[in-house]
Amino acid sequence: MTLPSSRTIFLIVFLGCAGLICTALFMQYVMHWEPCPLCILQRIMVITTGTIALIAALHNPRELGVKVYGGLVTLSAVLGGMVSIRHIYLQSLPPDQVPSCGPGLDYLMQVFSLFEVLKQLLVGDGTCATILFQFLGLSIPGWTLVAFIGLAAIGIYQFSRPKISFR
Image (cartoon, rainbow, N blue to C red; front, side, top):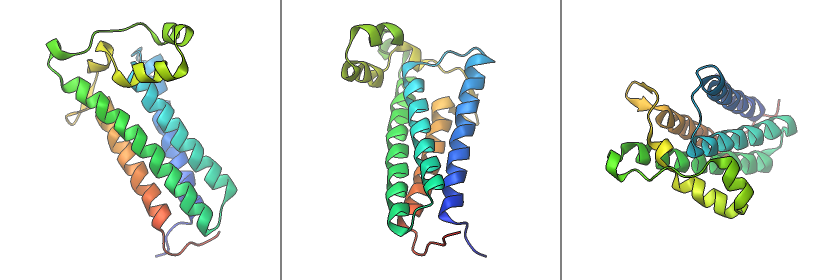
């Protein structure tokens, strides 16, 4: 059995990320669940990972390029996973230890620099501790972490792939 080409694998990563974003948009616009700041950061990291994979699939690089793109996919997925872990941590806090809710993202973007906004988003707030949905004991950020682990594993595979077929 031959393994799929690196181009095919990158395309699968892109399609997986597109599916994750479609799911997030369905939850937001059909189910009317407003995303918290950490949800937005996780979406950004899914989009970043998917964009890197799409560029890699379109570029169809040789060995060094596959390693570079694989490393970038891994880095992006690991960073997204870190945001998911922070989100899961906030959801696990007792109600009296949850950070207070802060101003909305629109207000933060108007008043503060991008660095300050990112810093505030990474801290999270009370809205990030709300669990809207669980499936098999995992909340939405838990499932997003599972997805990021899978994406990182695929990126590591692409990075360390011993023999690459160019189809």
